[in-house]
Image (cartoon, rainbow, N blue to C red):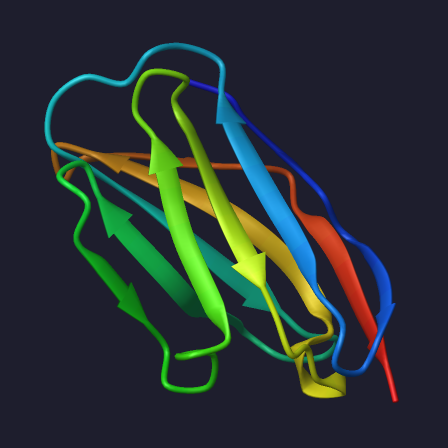
Length: 115
């Protein structure tokens, strides 16, 4: 499975962006799709996740501002990011884990938030 992320860009503080990640093939079985981000000089960290049955989880730093969603028919996951802050600046990566075993990563998309 290949993951293709898109939607990054540059916005001012308080703005919004929507990231999308599309899988190259249909995803079957129990799986979790996640977004991670990596700021310059820092480790990659968890942002949000959504299970195949729609349960979501967020890092405390984005809760209430970001919304993760998925389309199981199209095998896509999206991340709606509102009220963006400069500290949200990072490369965002989508991630898919199938059956708790097989892990796939997208190539990353850059989000830059200016103050």
